[in-house]
Length: 228
Image (tube, rainbow, N blue to C red; front, side):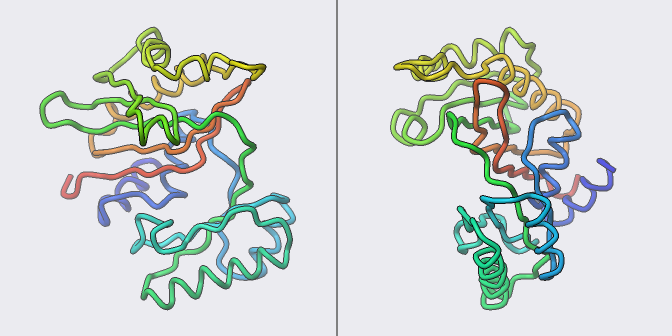
């Protein structure tokens, strides 16, 4: 399954979000619950299975950055909104001339501490891992840590604890501490992916939401090396 998934992705140079999340799940990473729907009957079944609130995203081989085309709709809390959001995404695809493989319907993740987990194939160092907190900490303070893969869990823990914003993960002002142990395990799994799948050039799991128990990968983007 994994080989076929990579083979399909190499043709376009990246994985569709459901493919990227399938790959993550294959490596034991925690991803959300989602269903790709293609018509209203599929949608109604998905809504019954997943419940509310939901997020819906365009799935197209022509759209890498979904938000840029308006292809992400959040906080869907009724069947009526689900249907209108589905039709809106179909219209976006039609107007943009994008091929539509379906619409990803996913149960919205509860609030937690937003983090970013990433990896990139560097021409000098090889596979490099990145970890940081999301939002203002990345955009303003550039508060991220790096390691060259492969890493072991102790190195992953160092990546987390050396952040300036680490006290937020540790728990401040009455907040429960985040499950740092599970985040470290996720970093090791990403390290394994980069070592075992040399076809991958970049991984961006943003956001990965940390909880007091576990974490959830909300969005996954995986780029591949064309011609591999």
